[in-house]
Image (cartoon, rainbow, N blue to C red; front, side):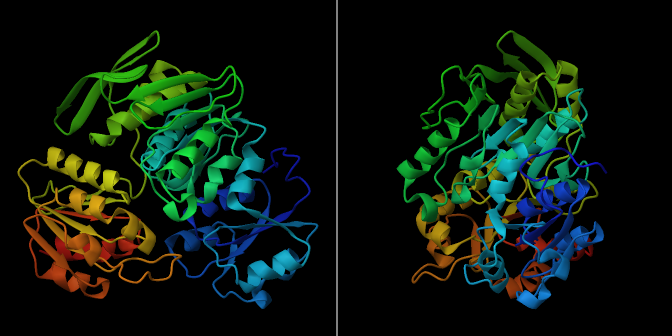
Length: 466
């Protein structure tokens, strides 16, 4: 296809991605491939996502050795190199590019290059941003506006984390606070869903975390809009002419929900905003935590110029983002209900569990929660324990370390010892399937940002075999 004009990228024919299998890297690889770039890259291990990228045309390797770099990607004048902060500093491939005159940029820098000249809706928050961003993308992709959306999860409506509408002037960005990546963005409309402290290895403490979000709000373009959830500790730092508006899924804020009704597996509500009242909005994924997200998404899209009917249709047709309160088995055949959710902060875990309890009253809820990162476990163990205590049963494997080395004295028991529920058990990940084979469940919910989702097909097979 004809390449979209972008003066910061036009000089390159190719891009090499170090850490090519990350969900946030994949949408950029897809965007560049659809704009005529040749793509190659390295990742530590193959996955369903990397296999799909290879089918789409990416040349990927899983060996971190310089000899694995294709010859045509060894010209610094033609090849842009993109890396993720999760890649270790001693990566031979990354170091070779850095030492040989290539323009080596972080993922967030490339995202900034792509979106700098466009109008953009950027969604930030410690939780809720992937779902809200995906809702916005699903509304706008079928609207008269269109959009190019770079999502942090797979939009199930299209099976991809990239939405493209050639010629659209709007970019939709999931604004990630990790490594201060969102400080490279210049939003036209910014949404802040939540500011519960996270990534304290980066920000130090809650004050530093809030300062990071305050700086993000200072990047909104003059004449732009900030939509911020009511009641947050955030103190925005806005340019002159930027309009600040609040929202919530309750009767609070400039944009809010009224007349909320639950029933027959659906949620409906009335959206109320400045000179706006839209009745009968129905989120396609009917869980309580999505009311807030739907209000934010609708407000952002209406502010961008979408019509009320486009908003209603896009919300109702929304099928969710993969691993964001994804109902794997609905239990309608009398079998176990199974839900998977990426929730990885105490408030997210609590909200997810409470939503399940409200959706399936009277049923026993078993949560399989794998802690993600030693530092996050250390910093938030009491909060996780309190949140998990809302379940009926908790099964917890060992910590998923991701990019971290072990921290002395930090393990899953730091959380599990303070969980107060009917039943709790530590089970190493390698033994998890055998444990599931020997138990009966009403509802199984896998929670966390670890790789617990890799086991889902096997868990489903066990549950359906009963």
